[in-house]
Length: 237
Image (tube, rainbow, N blue to C red; front, side, top):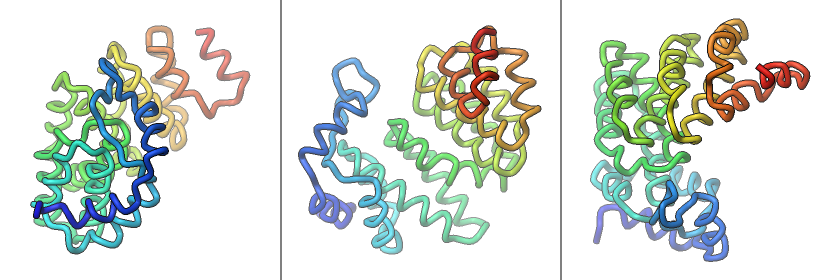
């Protein structure tokens, strides 16, 4: 029996083939698309969270590694939900470091936008806040040339934003102004918007410097909550 089979059994019992067909389209699994080859059972996110809450205390690292190597998307996402719960429920200290390093070792399985967004700022972000000496990891991820590791880098900084620290996000946003993929434009614009939710002057300063050259998708995400007249002014440049 494989290490992650307890989780797999729960997920397979919830499988919905019709929903799976929609997920295949939604997550761009066709040839040449960013999610090419990903497989789905048709289990909803709330259902996966329920499975994670039931099994997080009894699912060890061997099982999580097994699940994060699974070609089925829900196995990987549920494993990440479990890992997030384990991180949140352990005290600051050595075990959190073990979990954060485990997460970094398993990034090959964190290979779609929802997997990144459901884990990076809940695990790696808080850990780097506790261990600023390790922040060189962000640069390595950002320079990796791998779309998902790059997205991990910017999404990790959501934890910094919540703590009132905007510098790392703004530095990465500058770096990704020339990124070719819209999934990075969306993530970066989202983080700029989150900065603006807390400090509008910081976001506006960035926009004033870069709005004419930043990707339009990034700009649209960054100004999504602005009043309509102001949105149009920024879009006109």
